[in-house]
Length: 336
Image (cartoon, rainbow, N blue to C red; front, side, top):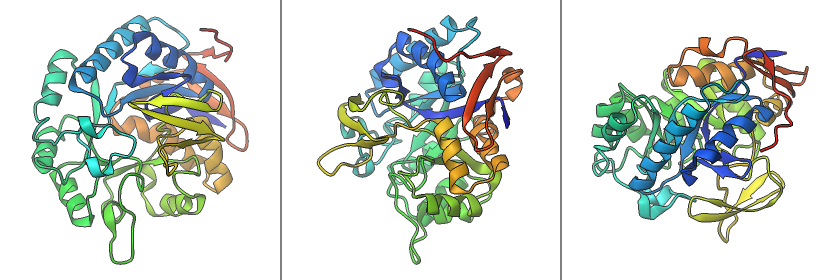
């Protein structure tokens, strides 16, 4: 099976010991050079909830890393930045740093300021729409960026109003938000009542049970499902303790553990593993290709022509065989 363009990951904090929120040029370069091991040919490095100063430093590092990789033939392309935080509900922050959460009213100038200094870099903004100024923020910026509901206490009616204001996506659906009950349909219910909302799904079989994953793939429009890793620096690394934002997270047996209750804190999965998981869970290959490659690019409005002669080859069970970038086979043994 050939997947044109390869896997596109629009929500990834880190991997191979590196993390976007380190604000490290070398770290982003390392991620870009090693992600093809997972079949990833393009990605949106994703911030944690960090200080405003560190947000700017992340954008500076991204810009420098992308420039340094401009003529590198065998690396994943840096598409733009996914801003997860600071516009999150502190009560749903999870591993995110509550001290740096801001209301949309407080951060109303942030996208404009980032755009002025780093034109075209910002792609996705996560937001809890119930916070002060949430609807106004969405109305102001939804024409220029993907506004995605995340880490939120929004119910069905709040989500529907956010969608009416221009929000067009939901971040890692069913995680860091309410569920879908028989008398409380929640954000998922709102998504199901709309056919134009894109929905991120983490398909490691841990964040969402395989049975529920099958339900989501049956209910949601095929062209609106976006598979993401939401991985942190422990992805591609041995089991152990790793830093995620300001928190220590244990990575063990393919799962993350945070705090005394062992809550999830991002993932240590990758796009290739998720594709093969979905095949095992009973999802057809054409749907897998769309959700892992076609739909992510459409989410951020990027033409896939820049991925000419770039593809992933997988076996009959959707397991990664090789990654080809611009006609060159990635050998997977790069030493950094």
